[in-house]
Image 1: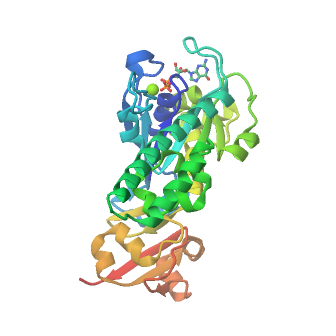
Image 2 (image 1 turned 90 degrees about the horizontal axis):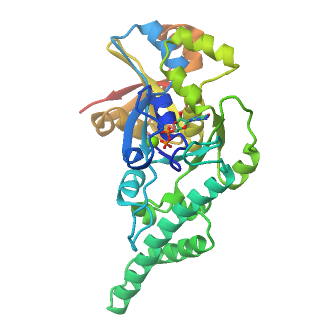
Image 3 (image 1 turned 30 degrees about the vertical axis):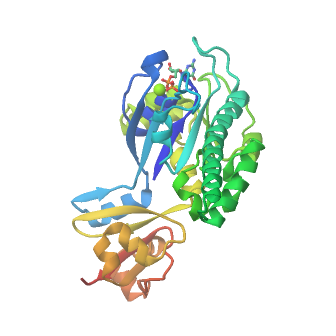
Length: 351
Ligand SMILES: Nc1nc2c(ncn2[C@@H]2O[C@H](COP(=O)(O)OP(=O)(O)O)[C@@H](O)[C@H]2O)c(=O)[nH]1
Ligand SMILES: [Mg+2]
């Protein structure tokens, strides 16, 4: 899973990126220095995986990971073709979801905070970027039709529909048939991606923004104190617990961001266990066993025979794989079995 961190300069993108990935990149850069992109990885916290690790004591305990791209907001100056710059588009088009960081504190260079205005303004940028792509493509298809090329009528129909949504200044993500159309996948429309709004709050103030209001119009919304979260990410485990207590934090922003991302993208985890490695894997909810096998290794998909499956909770209750087997909790499933969150799977395959 790949998430793009976007937002206006000084909103706290790099601060959040550091908090998520544990990196320590310079923050608070302005102008030229704030440009460019950072790429990093966060481990998905999972108590179930840790439990399995303690049971099996494997040589390697491998967490699922989420990739984050911290992309500076770049507009191409003086270009008539595009509003958002090439760099922004190239880095953000391939991500699965967007995390929009919104500044809720006064900034020495960028001034007062206007969260609602910023949310709307950035959304407009995404809509405009898509609009330009759709408009150009439709023009081209019309031109080709005049020359006798028919094209894919379904694609044209979908593009026309997308155009009318964008003309009304609405993002594409609320239109299920557009957002999920295989004919449009290649366009990677920005406004079709799920958006998670992250309010970056002032450290010593309580929030003045109504997250429910935002959720109604935009998508899932969570708030955090980015500066504090970044400081916490630089500490060791025990220190973090103490500080969280001091600041009255129940959970880290990192954990909440990942949880909301999983929910938004409808992702689940399954586990594989062995002496060498105990590992968590990420798949879309609804994935069948055959495809889950392919996530682990392409040979497992090619030579799939069956999956031995035990639900994590059953495993935990039984205390060991052998007991789970004796109690009939280890099931044999075929390739069309729909994998559930927390399944521990042993793929049988033959090539
Ligand atoms: N006053 C104040 N400053 C903050 C807060 N959170 C972040 N900042 C500062 O705002 C700036 C955000 O910078 P950065 O993360 O580089 O933003 P980016 O341009 O979106 O990547 C940094 O100087 C942070 O220290 C806050 O809650 N209060
Ligand atoms: Mg930055």
